[in-house]
Image 1 (cartoon, rainbow, N blue to C red):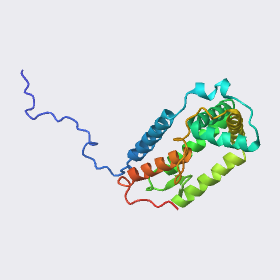
Image 2: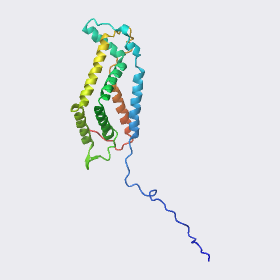
Image 3: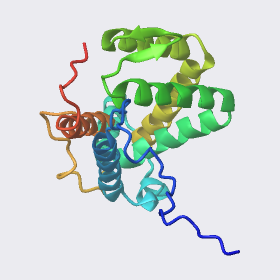
Image 4: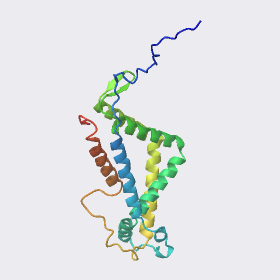
Length: 227
């Protein structure tokens, strides 16, 4: 005896997630600000490295002579800094990097502090507020917590002493080199630093922050005011 199947079409299961409204929208990550910040730092570093002098000039043994006086040593340091500025920054950076690499605990602590500033303040959307252990923190409170944390990490741990010691060692190397390196063979006319604005790392950080803020403006609405 033949059986007749039902003529009604089979109903396929359809996921309800396609039509369900998004009741908990997440705020968009401010990627343009992060991208602008990283791009500006990269461009500034490349521009600075392009002004680096040949290391052969820096270590030319024939150019090393004893300064005649303290004022002569000071003049040499100023002129050599104007010419070898990028090389000197590189030396200080290498000394600091070596000091941190030989102290991995301090390096990890400093990286955690930097990550806290980046993800909790610089590039975190102002809405919703930061919530820690069930308590919401405003922008001003978040900034205060990060400042207190930075003071504790830098001044109450070995991180601060390592950074200060490495910076002093790097500056000592620069002063000794600048005092004994005769600058008479260097073309210094175009190397005098121009006034009216910060140079070196201050210019890098200031320009990067400005570009990041400009990119963050159209993305975050309303604009957050950090006190």
